[in-house]
Image 1 (cartoon, rainbow, N blue to C red):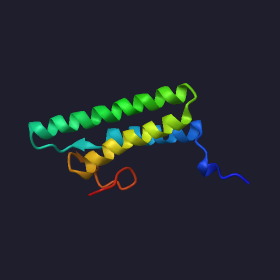
Image 2: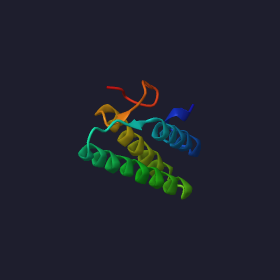
Image 3: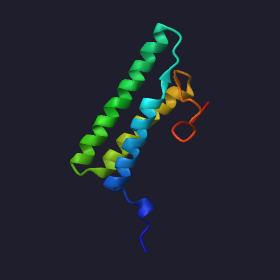
Length: 98
């Protein structure tokens, strides 16, 4: 008997791509100064780059790397919420709230 929870499928990668896109759209900036704005821009750029990497890997059949990349992407958003650069609007499904 196999455990489908341990298999990286295209559907699973897509689920997390969608979840990360939802988080990216929901979170809003709460930066207080230019330095924080620049830090947030860098973090969101990393998120976006990892999302693109995940799509690239998925579309080329490398589901393990795709799954890893999308989790890194989401982690950048989650970290920005956690340290107070983004507002997660109380959504503990999408974010690890402070």
